Length: 168
Image (cartoon, rainbow, N blue to C red; front, side, top):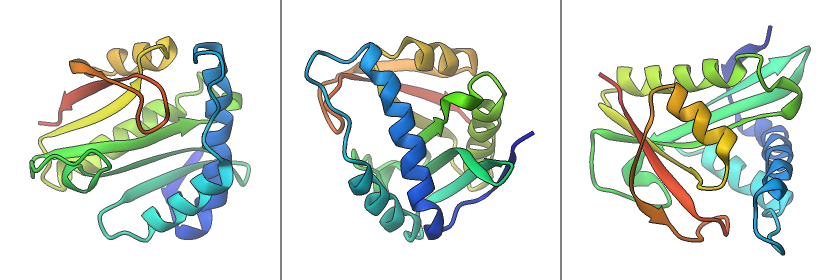
């Protein structure tokens, strides 16, 4: 069973590898010509974000290897800021394909939502690609509801659907 611990800036490269592996699955539904963001760029961005006092992050490890991670922050500090002190933004939830179906994603998601609730947030949002049926089914099974219009194109060049969940 995977062990979950708080993420540190030194985890950024492993987290970027996990994101890159996750993005390989996007080829199944992304439009022709779509390319995933650069892994080095992700690693640098993750390292910077992990140093932010606003970001909360955990990694899951199995036999010493990172197999997943989750990050969240106040929605007001996200890339699509909303000035709502009750709203947290789930920034990343990625699990390596080798650990799909093991419960790691569910555990990471529950940990982030519980931590956000304990920090005083009453709801949480996320955005996932509209065409990513597996992710959408997962979030819906976990109680998340789609809201609002589709967000077109940014930040990863795919149409995104916002989901929200009440934390209380």
